[in-house]
Image (cartoon, rainbow, N blue to C red; front, side):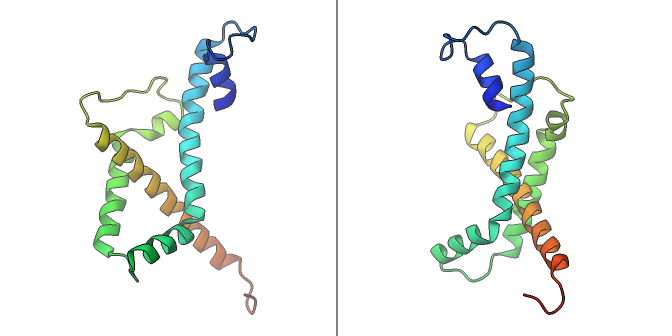
Length: 140
């Protein structure tokens, strides 16, 4: 979806293609595919979260994560998810993306990073749960 809409929207890079019209559809498809892509990339990251955290712990020489920090990050990710009203973009209830131009750029990226971490954690624990129930007794 992102590639198709990107080609339709790009009037400069792909000017040699005989594409006319379809800009409204392309904008809607691009927005929808962007948010779903963000969600799926986050979920995919969560499926490999054990490896990521192992590398991070090794680099930081830590054995166990801080429970307080973990819960603060989860809460921040949930807050950002609702603040940015992600469900309305994922379900195409809103056809335009609204950004707060007064918000500092660093905070904007931090909020999206928090949302990504929340989705990754959901995928990580879902994978662990499904893996636990998918194992047969006596098998490793």
